[in-house]
Image (cartoon, rainbow, N blue to C red; front, side):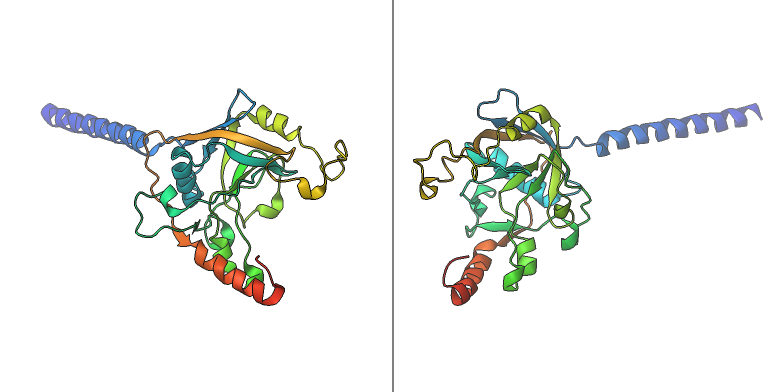
Length: 255
């Protein structure tokens, strides 16, 4: 009888040990550190650090990681807008910027990670959130193509922008350097009322010499060993060509 009880106790203890081990392993396996982007701004020693959210916006995160760690954002121009820091650099990413030796190379768009595009991304566009910029082709009959047109441009918000919720792919939030973001935002100049240089005409003012343009020296992303793969991409060159054809037909110029 005593031997039977002892056998049962040993069995219970063994099962308990197995269960404890299982939950420890499970915790270590599934608790993955989100990627952290470090943005170094020219003229500011302290960086801005952003925790990316691949669960909410897998395409935006995968795309951003590839571009950043391939050096695409080195010496990248950003404009200080009322809503935040918005990428203003004219260069667009091509498939070769995120993929080695693609069969064909083109300016791409990624599938938009937002509710209107059937992706369950509920990150709200609040101060400190980073979000993708995209085109709106709905006027030309290409609504879905506009949803999937985000390429490399992004914004880091310095205020809440509720109108972006559900129609733009927010994919992370500032965790360090909010004071740097605030300091940059405070340098914004309203160029429409600035008459400090009366000799400079409106035509002579370019994006490159704008008082509100700053330079991102570099962006690097620590993925903590996780490979976020390739984003789902579309050929955006084909869409923009169709849109421009429509625009030329009705308005006589490029969109």
